[in-house]
Length: 312
Image (cartoon, rainbow, N blue to C red; front, side):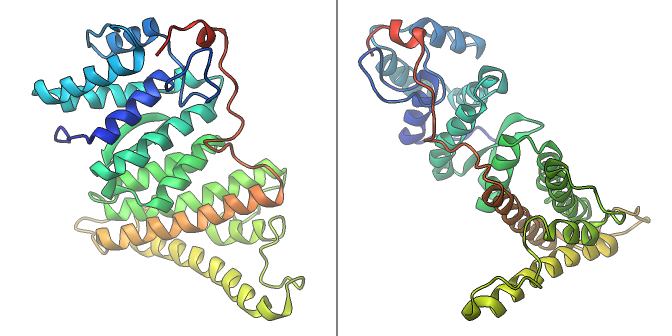
């Protein structure tokens, strides 16, 4: 990827995540990401091969340093990419993964304006062009990472990585994304996997535990027919993706010269599979009262390190 340019708003968001925001012992605001003291910020920047020293207050010093880096260093954009990736690496957030997701969401809110986005590939952050991932795809990836549905995340990553270079493989991975979320939910609920473990069998297996059967009779009269039609369409859509995988994907091998679909169809399959996957995850969360952590929910108060930090 060509070294990108970054807006002042993105620089500010990055400063927020690196420092944890303005604060100290007198602040009641929860940190964004991790609250870091001056020495911790200097150490993080050293890991990025950058010589930075806090001169006075943490936040203004770092803000000015990053602005100067972008304006005066020909490689400033590439160096900022290193910082962005480093500040959301998983090891720093091992005990509090919800803070990591909050940090990624905060950065992506501003990176999107620069045409960029942080995605997780095998739980490792990468900065990519935003055009490779739509809103629903990003939401599914974030939820899958947060609830540790690792197989769902891997299949989605594979689909995204292949969408522009190998449409057949992307369709196969899109189908696998739905299959993986069905299997993950069934395992999570302690429900045995069906004898037929293709996408149709798995979708039917989760209908009853998630109350998604089109035959349900507990719906209000005025919307019953509509909801049944939507629920029936959910299974039909999933089956369609499975059929596309069989006839146009690479699940069963490919002969020389095989190419029946292009990137448009692959992206359609990815986004459709992501919509189905997101609906299944959110239905599971709602029915079994297991909501995911949100960026603003239950962020622990700063610890001793924060209270001992200097003024900002």
